[in-house]
Length: 121
Image (cartoon, rainbow, N blue to C red; front, side):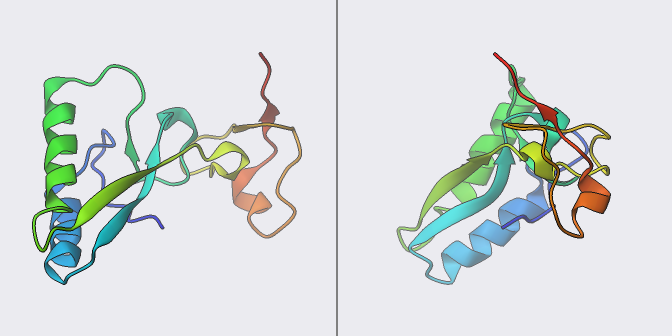
């Protein structure tokens, strides 16, 4: 799942927190977040939350509020879905992508994702 509700710095927004608070209030026992990217250079789409590198105070506060919003009611718990888009990184984010191989997607998505660069050690 992807919500596309992060701000331009890939931080959780009040709208994203409100979404998870609503689900918590509705009685969902376990909420699993949408894609939280570990590398903002290769995100699945604009609007994903990203947590790569050092986090400043504003980022930490936004992440804490995000976590609390999904646990606000009825004993709900929230788990973070960490991700790296790899070869599914769209040209809306970056004109280059990186993956375990240099094989492009073989679907309509390859028109927006392009050919990835192979990861190396």
